[in-house]
Amino acid sequence: MAEIAKEKLAALMLECPKPSGIILGYGTAGFRARADTLPWIMIRIGLLASLRSKVKKACIGAMITASHNPEHDNGVKLIDPFGEMLDQSWEIYASNLSSLDDSIDALWSYLEKLMTQLNVQLSDKATVAIAYDTRQSSPFLSHIVQRAAEIFDTNIMNYELMTTPQLHYTVRCYNDNEIYGRCTEMTPGVKHPEQLAIDAANGIGAQKLVVLQQRLSDLFKIEIFNDGTQGRLNEKCGADYVKLYQKAPEGLPLTNYPKYCSIDGDADRLIYYFIDQNQHFHMLDGDRFSVLFASFISKKLKEAKLIDQVKMGVIQTAYANGSSTNYIINTMSVPVACVPTGVKHLHHKALDFDVGIYFEANGHGTVLFSDNLKTKVKAVIEDENRQDDEKLAAKQLHVFIDIINETVGDALADLLATEAILCLMNLSIEGWLDLYHDLPQRQLKVAIKDRTMIQTTDAERRCTTPAHLQDCIDELVSKYPSGRSFVRPSGTEDIVRVYAEATTQADADKLADEVRKIVEELTK
Ligand SMILES: CC(=O)N[C@H]1[C@@H](OP(=O)(O)O)O[C@H](CO)[C@@H](O)[C@@H]1O
Ligand SMILES: [Mg+2]
Image (cartoon, rainbow, N blue to C red):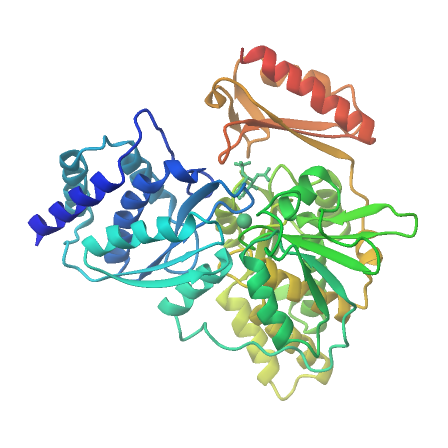
């Protein structure tokens, strides 16, 4: 069997050779690069997915997407049995596999070593679930993952077109259909929400939104724009564009709708916005979802008389607006944890709480609920001695848990949850925005010759190298009231990101620019 597998692998490697000089690391969201440079890595990731499945004795997911990046890019990431990101200890195997030469003997001997170390056999059972976004390169790349995994005797479930959160959820359902895979009912009595216009980034989300639109037509009036029939994926549209440029996307009529939202290319990010009477644009980003969800959940926990029995927390990254952090800690009295960029870090930290609410400022996030909390909510619903209003609050929490996708941030699930909360809390989008006032901020991308020259600590809020960079940033920041700035290398692009916030937009822009100059200076 091993002989045949090795021959098949050698043939596949000849079909998809590794370009010379290429270095790819398993970054913030798996491997990501220009699509035409990726076929060879799909072989290695297919093999790794199969091995992971053999070890965990469970289905593993492989999602082909480059999310909010341009159409010509693509990428792949693995999903662990509970629908979460690949365990970080395995990212090293992924990067090791990537760095091996394009020789069948080198690859084969590494795989043999790995199988011995992991105590698995080629013939052990494996199941890999594959899905991809709407990029032109996606079907071809997914086919390579499939062929590679099949060499290792793997049962493949190819779901073809899916959003990223759908695949995360599907993997979880497959492995855990006791708890998951149930149909979710909306709360009875929810009023008709107002109309909502959605920018689907010309991505996979558009197709899935159509299904939602049809199923929920009595409850929910949504209109879908940038649905992929005309524009290009993520080009001047989508959640990343709106967040980065802080303006409305193209391809969306900016009148007639009381509220708008944008999702990204693989539908795991969500950003809301609206245009006021003076034609000013206002954006509600990930930080706002944390505040909204935390307000709703704590209100319902109070009503269900459960608040004193559970530990609730919000998890953010350094990109969260300082005003949101301040509001959550000081006005809502909810603790906030700050972790490095990347959903895996937020998700991991959220597990420390009974209710762990996490959002990246860019709109990726979800809420995790502990088994302890779920049991308590169920007990209130079933307890005959409880008052009706206590039971109703517990039921609403139960429905919220059903709507939300606990495996990963999911734009469509977050959208449904947001609409339900706004309706139940009788809150307009303006009222939601008025909960606190953002500090003006600016984000810049800076190209330097080697981004690994910049290393950070303290959840990426401080630089440790190059020498003196942090001292210089501290000095610049001290000149601005409520100023804050940090620098970190991107894990998905060959750039360094600069972030700055201050009391006025002009100051935030100026601070960001000064920090950019110092970064360029010290990394020449
Ligand atoms: C500032 C920012 O938005 N960074 C994004 C971006 O990571 P970088 O490592 O900053 O390139 O892409 C990640 C994957 O989509 C996402 O998790 C993260 O929030
Ligand atoms: Mg995405």
